[in-house]
Image 1 (cartoon, rainbow, N blue to C red):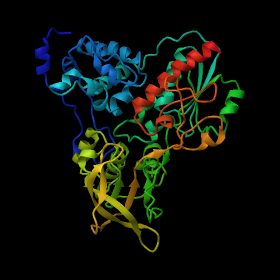
Image 2 (tube, rainbow, N blue to C red):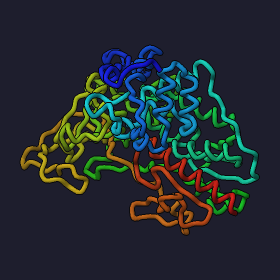
Image 3 (spheres, rainbow, N blue to C red):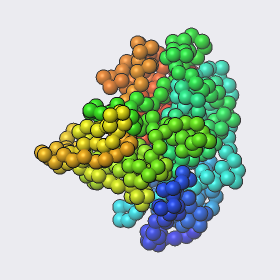
Image 4 (cartoon, rainbow, N blue to C red):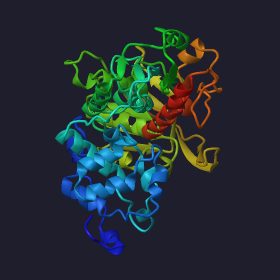
Length: 472
């Protein structure tokens, strides 16, 4: 690393991320962020103070050796940096794009105390992309085969993370995926412009090259129960089915044509490629030159509204019952949405949807809100303003207010304990469920959370499963 004093490093500004122009990208599905150049990456890496006790690691659920990989970036050893990350994270190209680093590793960064934190996520993305483009995905050495078999239910981030660690430990691993494509929420939930599907495919292909067996169209609970998997030779099971059951507003008119859950809308567009209709024969509401309203303020809501804009919507609204300060989406996603012409109707809440005589959505009645005292989440509670109702004419609505747990596992495996929300209860250290040999992690345990937290649960479970298999 070039010899620079701490003072000199602190003077280097955070390097900007090259990106598509907002107006241009709102009309295509190509990736928004273009990635660092080698020069930008090395300059950003020089901002790292190489702290003797790097507290940034405390903010990383999979405990990537952040200081060490950034040192290698500054030295220009990008392949070495990629290898260092992969000691703890098998999906760095994914995490570098979609993880909320500003709330995790970067939030702990010492540089951020007096300025802007080091762009850890952008550097992670850079080295992962560099490795893929210059070397292909390098596969680690595997330990000798143990003869033990593990079934993983779900090919989302938690399942993939767990599979990567277990296959390296010498166990045979089979991942069962309910859909026809692999990747879970990474492919059905996150749009192409944020996470290209080729990136996810490359990461999954690297796991295949290690020997992980992937089975699609396998709805565990229907095709086989967990008991049947264990009777058929699997020594342990990891449940990583996510939280894919959409929540609704439960208001009048929600069954009108033109009202979607975010799950259905994004799955049709992302996984089933409705944005390429008629090349891909997947119907989705034709929003070209029409008005779309997305209800919610999280990352999924931003994904849905930005997708509708790319599908040709003339007006695309985010409708959220709190103010701008309480929006839970990543700041970068909010910033990108505003650049792309998304309109934010804040402090507004839907009362009912309005339709025509043929059952098609034509509008939504909204009521203005004001913020009262903080609620259980710590955010100020939105309170309706009396007699402030008004109607907004819209052609399509997307409900993006969160997801719950699919009840299939609960209905077919009665000896696994669940809480009242349908989340699996686990031991926090081992991720073990109440059923011997069965572990669980990710959104099915925590409820809807982040990709990296799900991956952290997968790694924790893999360690516990490995210990369980060596003792049984």
